[in-house]
Length: 457
Image 1: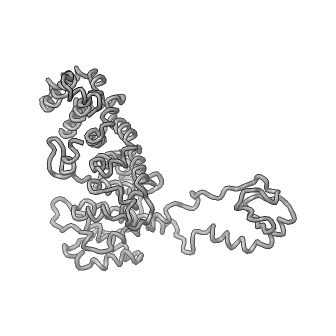
Image 2: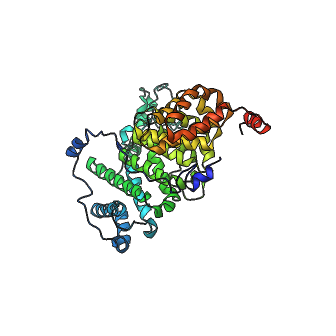
Image 3: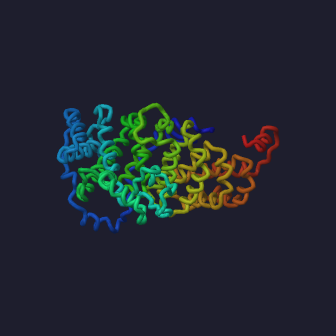
């Protein structure tokens, strides 16, 4: 808890006052590898969103109502124009002088974009993958089976065709009487709707949803949009639902969703899911954290890196800490596993999350020191070293946090020679490891130190 307030105001223990940098599109954000990228481009159908356009700075101010109405219309030409326009308005190069598109200046824009994603998600799961009604064959020749829905009541039995019935006369008569009625009800259950989409229509819906999610992701990079998006319950519910269904959902849509919440994490309060704001998808705080835990356990590097970064930013907020505490043992164990990867960005994300976890949670400090390979992998990041000096500094600070608890003294003394080696060989971390060795070798000689050792203060 020592540096929580410092962390919220801009960094801890020598950190900069600037807020954490926004994430760009990570390498390998989808399952397609670099080797197959060119092949995928060659076989991809013609893009739905059309050619690139040049948009004047004041274009959005003059056409903001038309953009929202075009998104709400559902017409292909209008939708394509609006998505093209917003894609360019929401994307800005470093040297581009274009004004950022502010969601607050365009009423209804965020809701219109979310509706496009919701429309796709309503048809995203094919009917063949849905769980069908289970066929009951036990007691098929009996008048009453006890299975409830298949036989409503004695004397007014309407036998369903799925049950594999025998040749009873009563069954045949009642079945013949209810044939037309049963077929009408089956038609409503079996058909997807009057206006079914073919494969091309589904592909267009999917592309529109991905384009809308990419626009929302781009908006999340703009500081003036952060508060509006972090307090928009429908936006958060849609994003977390996409993350929750990452196994069956479009990969680029999931990547855009996880990057969006990473950008909004410093301002995100999970208690919004239990607030009185109108809910559209009924996402709870627990489901939201479980969705992130699913991404943390994913094998896709961009996903588990983003999930680690999100958890590291969320734990700093004291309002979110009680919701994350039940998952802390799973979180730091998975972060230790990520440290074993050879990817530098994965190691940086894991170190950043562990740095905040051990800073605000004493239980994590006590258990991380005894976790197998944890200290070895953290030291490896320092000794390799990691190409980003800030990551090495945070790794050294994690060791110092662990050494500050007397309960960890026994387990950390096994690394005393390694600490001394880094102390004399690396001038950048000499002060930190000098303090670590002092904590490990000093003995409590007063009442305050003894109380600290007993109660873990």
